[in-house]
Structure formats: C-alpha cells, structure tokens
Image 1: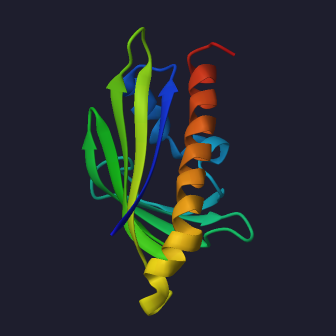
Image 2: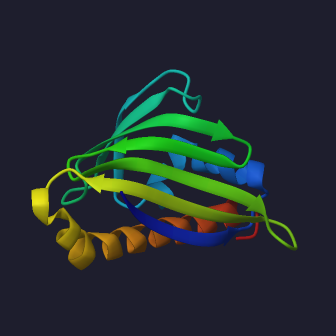
Length: 151
C-alpha cells in the first residue's frame, strides 16, 4: 500500500468544509481531473452509497467511489479506477483563528504494472498523486473562500 497526502487551510468551519467536499455538484470546481457524473446512488453522501464519474479526456478514465466512513471529522471512500484502487480520506479539524485544517490522504495499490509497480510508483506515480491531491486542496480552499463570502 502506498500513500499520497496533501494539507491545506480552508476558510470554512469543519462541518461546512465536509459539506462542500461531499457536494458532488461542486466537484468540477476543485476535484483534479473531474469531468462529469455518470451514476449517483440516491442517498449520497451516506455510508455505503457510491458515485461513478468520468474524468476529462486523457485523465483517470472512469472512477468509482464508495463511501466507507462519514463522521464529523472525516469522510472516506474506496476508490476504484483503471490504474489503481485504494482508500481516500479527507480529515478536518478546527484551525486556530477559525476555519479548518484539512488533510487529504490516498492510500492506494496500483492495478497495473505488475512486478514493476514499486518502481513505477517511485519514479512516476507517487509524485503525481501528491501533486494532484495538492492541486485539489488548493482549489478546494478557493471554493471554501467563496462559500465563506471572502471572495
């Protein structure tokens, strides 16, 4: 299992940050590579529900996320796509002076590459994953500022 991680500060309180994170209608504004929803189960964002989405061209392809944990301080999904499968978690905590500290973690296993997966991860994948998560959280922070009325 490999891990990619990013952190950011968001201008929203933790509950509001989680509400924004789980609002699929807003994903196009901050989720790296997000194209459009193909399928959404009826009680999203409740545990056990899932979304199937498609990335933009030359992206991740079709991605399925199933909610496995939803608590006041975290939201986790199992992620399945052509290149990897894993568990993605957003943790939120109150920040000093208001807002929230957020951490996005993706623990993953590569689905392809076979015996070269460790080398491929070291040379190509892990850095890209860290950068993608960081870009997602930077855009998420901007959306949080808009949501908080700071922009």
